[in-house]
Image (cartoon, rainbow, N blue to C red):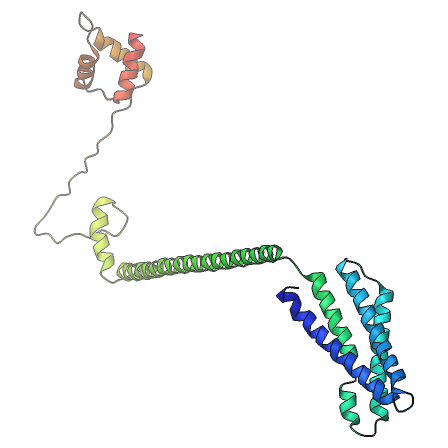
Length: 290
């Protein structure tokens, strides 16, 4: 019997011994007045002996991993019989009824302790199994702690990220608001200047020479008679068609012997007052050379 088993079996043994002694004493004192004390002793020993025998047999079955409801029922019957004897003696005693009733539950308590000890034995585990269970529980606690720490860290990181994003968004919104306010003020100043009294005269003096007829003519004061100058108009030379350009390029090229190069031809082409883009001129040259 190891120390852990002793924690439950010793109270059961002590309670059983007290119950048996108490039952035997009560039977001898109670029945000794009505019959010879030897007969009362035999009755008491019979009750205790039957209880002890059924208890021993029940413990033997439990050690073998077996169980018998009949044996258990007989054991409880002897325990209840002993309890009934003690209760009957307490109720018929002349004095100290409360004290006898206080100890009348000892047999039932002894049986209950043996029941607890049996349950302890059926659920007892070896030290190795207990160590494995403790290891599994510790591993589960460690994993749970790590998971909680990871979740807290991820939550803190996400909170920091959201805070940074929110602050950045707030800064951007603030800059946009300030920019919009600045643009609004500038636009208001421009609109105010455009609608000012002196703006029309200033615009007249600027736009009239560039685009006549847009605004009323505003002339500078002059001293003495003046004659208006005729406006000179420059007309752009008409663009040459591809066929005309090809003819000119071919004529200039073969104007001398041997035929001119592209650079010489282009120089004489422009010197003669003809106009054509470099791309068109080179394309015409390629068409005529091909």
